[in-house]
Amino acid sequence: FGAKNGNFHDYGKYGIIQLAAGKQPPERSERPMLRATTIQERLWELRKDKGLNLEELAQQTGISKSALASYEANDNKEINHGNLITLADFYEVSLDYLFCRTENREQINTPLMELHLNDEMVALLKSGRINNRLLCEIATNDKFEQLMTDTEIYIDGHATSTFRTLYESLEEQRQTIIQKYKQAEDDFYSKTILAAEVKEEDFFCHVTHKTWDAILHDIRKAHEHDIDSTPDYSAAKKVAMDIRKAIQSSGDYLGKVWAVIFNMLGVDFYKLPPDEQKILKKILSKAPNIKNSPFNFRRKRK
Image (cartoon, rainbow, N blue to C red; front, side, top):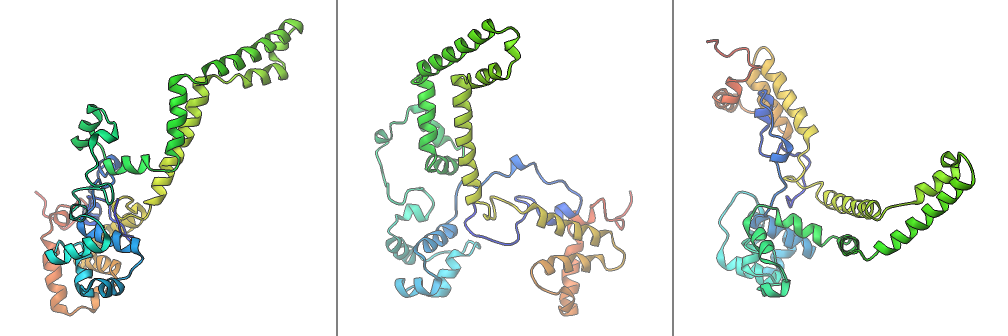
């Protein structure tokens, strides 16, 4: 899950240039939602949870606004150790939480025996084979308890006798009608009774599936604006197509590619000084994805 919102999302692990150059992006299954946050994202989330802007946080912690802003930027700058302690104390979390070594803000060092997990579950959670953060979101969804209750009722057979009694009663009525009236088996009322004969397995599979769908919908909606969770394929594809057209075009195609990229950032490439344009185009001309693109008709033929 990415922590911050944005208007332009990339293709996950894949870049616009690769797409524009005619290379296929990986399948969606290869672009999983993030399993862990970064220190920068965690600091941003904690500040937002407090409802503070950078200036207000600076006033309350004594740390400069510029320093706080740099701590939340995704450029891996070193963070002053003393300031980290100050922020951990202010947010009332452990340093381990800030360092993303734990997901627990409050339940710190809870004994494993209190969780009543078997060895297989503990091993699975430690293995890294599943997304533990996603599992936590599923289990803490307000509909999850209902899902567990319905599942337990079905697995333990608490409603089996009730369903069997209801089924047998309806079937008895249907058979009575069929025996009493010839050709009643295809009658509307007979079919109505047959439709009401819901089997226990069908009922609980439908109910639990419906609740499960609602949980997935809630979680997806909660993260629909996360940059790393939901790449905006339509926006990315449009930029990729524009770059592809630039590569295929005649004339200064390198300048046109840069124009598309800079336009995405709100900068007019052609208003840059000529020497800067020249340097950028020289750099881009060395890109393998541009030189080897099947859409670049200027590449040398072997």
